[in-house]
Image (cartoon, rainbow, N blue to C red; front, side, top):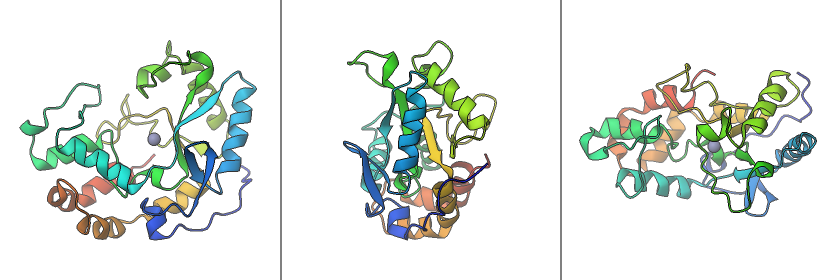
Amino acid sequence: MKSVSPKPALLNSAQLTGQSQSHLREAFPGHFLHRGVVAAYLVLVEQAAEEGIALRLASGFRSFERQLAIWNAKARGERPVVDSEGQPVTMAALSERDQVFAILRWSALPGASRHHWGSDMDIWDSATVNDGYQLQLSPDEYAAGGHFYHCSSWLDGLINSGKTEFFRPYIHSGNGGKADGVAAEPWHLSFRPLATTCETALTPDVLRKLIEKTDICLQGAILENLDEIYSRFIRPQY
Ligand SMILES: [Zn+2]
């Protein structure tokens, strides 16, 4: 595959873990991406438009603070935790270790979200739904018969043809793939040239130091299981 992008500079540790926004640019109102990714994303939007797809960002950059709030709300039972089939998990019945892994099925460890980097985004197609449509980001929406199946199939073709530098890091999970890691997220796209450098830079040591100094629920269980968390959820083989 021909690379059209210059090799991106490494993010510093604050940028890498979502604690700084200095690497970002607003791609669309309210949605931020790494400044080196915006142009490539806009090309993808144009390519999609030629297929009748109105590619939209549901989520680009997400901060450490935001991810921490989601994590703590799930750990405290203030936000539902669901399994890979979307069924509610009774957190109180689980050990702390199992609570950590239940949250990780759908939510990244704060500091370890690919959305911190600005290289990753959740996308949908506004051409196939009404204005008031409540976006779910559920596998059904992207599967055959779902609103975003056309968009998803088009992305499959584009990615498989090697004509884009975007890829889907979580597409092989779940259905017949890795059942023990992050659930399949067909809506999640990643810009490979930048994401690859971030994956390498985000070591277990970076995360351990960050979690140790963070006021986060289940901190002890996270630190005890960090190596397993890392291999299953942060750098799985895809
Ligand atoms: Zn995502």
